[in-house]
Image 1 (tube, helix red, strand yellow):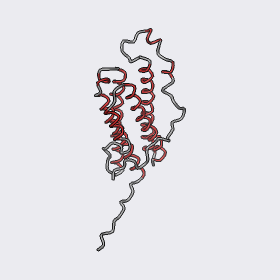
Image 2 (cartoon, rainbow, N blue to C red):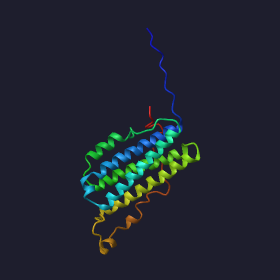
Image 3 (tube, one colour):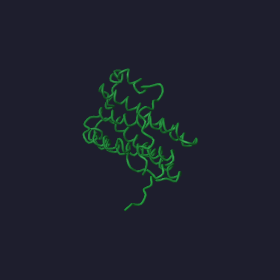
Image 4 (cartoon, rainbow, N blue to C red):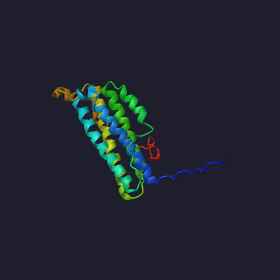
Length: 200
């Protein structure tokens, strides 16, 4: 007895693959920032970190929508799930998150992955509009990462943004002025795989 021959589903076009994967990374960022905003040490802690989390979440939500709109325009299924490679790990890390410095580190790592991925995908996408979309979003993710590095430095030095006096402002470490620019050219070695979170 022989069964029906199996067929391998055709591979999605490259633009669809990178857009779906980019959307999944943005979905993960939205979920992570949403959880971060609900942490007691964020809600009742540093206003600087809380404001950054609120704003960054809104940006990631807009980025996910932009990528999914582009996917729909390409005639493919939108990606509303979180990234398959990082989702479970980030969820576990968030479940045991206890301090703002560790949270800033995790959020910065996510921003860096997103920025590197968008930077790489910009070179792969066909058409100027898609390349521009990836470049624009990469620059926003890189900015998020820079600001998180600065916030991390300020938290480490005891400058949480509350009741800042002139004397305290003068004591802000010099590193806060340069830590947000860790490299001259943005790397792509940690970019996600093209088909990491395609809709199958």
